[in-house]
Image (cartoon, rainbow, N blue to C red):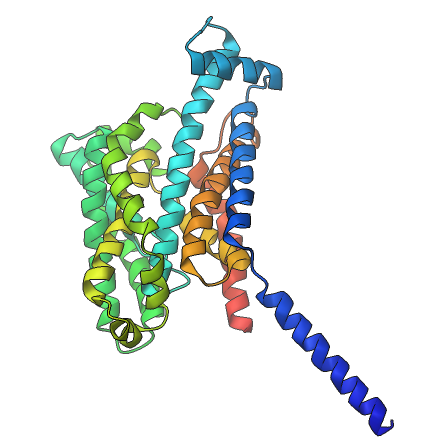
Length: 357
């Protein structure tokens, strides 16, 4: 090979490498994320209204939805089906948004790619508080669930974060292990409480698996104040999460009041998780998987990750809920079970990808 040929080959390899880097770093702009996300939400919502264990034609679904929205009901079979699907679809929208944003915020705040309300034990802590309220105070309303779930989630988040903060090793790993240990312990306590009370067991059993079915959309108003406050906090937390990714020293150098900022953002994340738990029970993996999917398209900027998660979270909940209606007809598989079944392989792939890096 002559010197000229060698130089040409080297230049070609350099160009190919640069092109590959450019392809890997190419990210979607915010307008594209919003446009694609809105289209995906609209498609998932329409599928949720049209598909179920009882089939109705698209035209009948449109007529039923029009009658439900205008209040001009004639009592047909299709109207009843569309009304029930509309309720669960609206709850799915709220729950998907809340869980995905909560997961994305926790991942940014803790700088842990495995952070998620389920894995860190927040959902389990919220469930324990609800069970104790059911068993000892007779609380069985969504409003009651909300404040119990918020209290249980906050206490658990503080415990997990405190244990990870005083550890000497890898804090990300310690946080996940502490969350797993808390979840195991809390689950045992929940089982012990429920075994001793059949009434609480029956009330909790359906709620525990995570479901948006059989609920009136009016229960969203019970969680609306906390939901709006938490959404506002998390929506404005993008710059704080971007600064957190740089490390605590740089956060202070940028003039942030680190502890206060993190406490407020953590309250928003736990508040969203509590709203979702109060509405539909603990739903796993959505808060973990959605931010990673969005990050592939948007890059590491948390302003875009939060925006994309708010749109893709509902899509995942609506599609898995719709799939759960048709896999074992005429019965349905609850959305909490479907997300766990589909999310576990995704988690394994993520771990394998991290190990191979």
